[in-house]
Length: 295
Image (cartoon, rainbow, N blue to C red; front, side):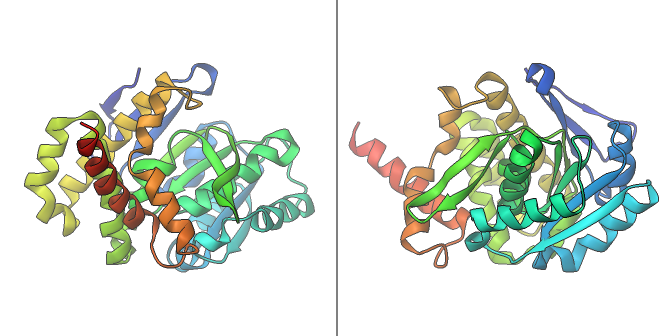
């Protein structure tokens, strides 16, 4: 089961991912990025925090995050990777692990994944294998990562033979979503990310799909109210599915709608021609057409 309620700050919403001892919150609200330090202290963390990000995101947000951590008493270790899907490799994981070893990270240390889906997957996977597993938190900065990849504990990297072939399930301790980070997202990335949002309407919520149809102009223009609703409802659906099927043995496969063809297209383009959301959008159209052909 999942729950959603308003906090004292009426601009913030919380969605719960219920997984027993591995349960965690998805916190959604403007300004959360600058409060990462206090949020981690509130979760019981202290000491060292690795901030894994990429060059594009670091230019906008790394300083703010490191400053918040420092004010809260953390010793931060920024780890900046190249941007893009081609960074999602075991080599990048090795870079992160080398830095954690040199900085003498311990089991009580924490990894902060600051960026899009690529950063979240790489940082989460590194956290899952370092000392056989240390805590990490997701701080997604793209639409795709905010509504999809940051939730559910899927971590990993690509292999030359296919996408996401190497990885582990490792749930974050919290997901902090600041919608304000979407203002710096390139338009192409924003529009591509909407494919994952539309996916939720198709697979789980006809009323939400209708809302998207009626509000799409405002959503495309990044109006705050519909964007907050889009993120929150998408997270609710993802959390509900993950809570019922954490390791994708049944129901969770529904979240892969559009991804079977989409991943193939990404691989065929060597992760250069299409970005993830674009490939998923094409995959959804083609898979819907295939389903109709099959009756």
